Structures are given as C-alpha cells and as structure tokens.
Image (cartoon, rainbow, N blue to C red; front, side, top):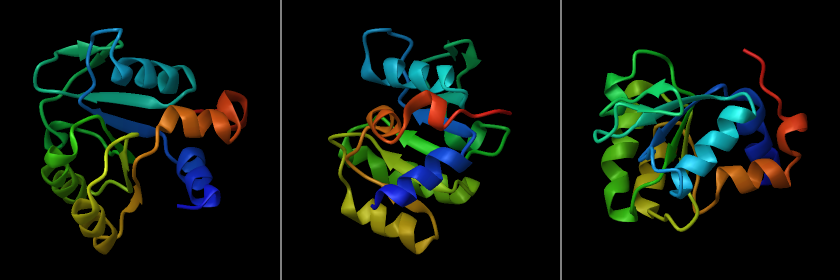
Length: 141
C-alpha cells in the first residue's frame, strides 16, 4: 500500500478497535494502543479475556461494540484473521490493519472485495511515526 493511502487512513480515522489488545503492559498490543490513544485516537479494546484496557471498556467481539469503528487493528495470529475480517465487514469498518508479521492473503482479498482498505504486515505505530508522528496526525474529536 502506498504511503499516501496509509496517510489517508491515519488522517481520517478516529476510532480504532484493537483486536487482541491485552492489559499486560509488556505486550506489543498494549504499547501500540497506548501510543495511538496518546496521539488522540479513540481506542476500543476487543478481547474476550479483558474487561477494561487503557481506561476503555473491552468487548468480546467486534459485533459487540456499540459505536462506529474506522480501523480494525489486529493483533492475532494469521490463522485467526479470516473471522475477524468477516466481522469487520459486517460492522462496516473502513480499514483492516494486520500488524507486523501478520499476513493472510485470503482475508485481505475478502476485505478488499467488500470495499475495505487493507494494510498487512505493518505496525500502525511505526507507520504513524514514520509518516509524521503525533504532531502531523493529531486527532481532535
């Protein structure tokens, strides 16, 4: 995906559901979500094993989230991606973002065919920093 498309996602999104977000501070999902929250994005934890992360109520499934989601940021192994992408399509998300190391071409194709933007095998924190960081993409609700 070209930088211009990633910039568009980072500039226009406001709400990011982080699937697999853990309350354990040493986990990559926590650090990434905390960074995004500090940058002004609304973070929604999606993890059936959590009740609250980073001061936000956690939901078991994307379908349980009562508000509109712009980006579904996925911290799950590649073999678990397809059902998450299917859920992202059902809820009307705009983008599916598979974190660094996560590749699922079949799920990516399904998302694209449904009209979603797809970022795969890239870290949203690293991309945010690389393309301008907190000051460039500051979000204001």
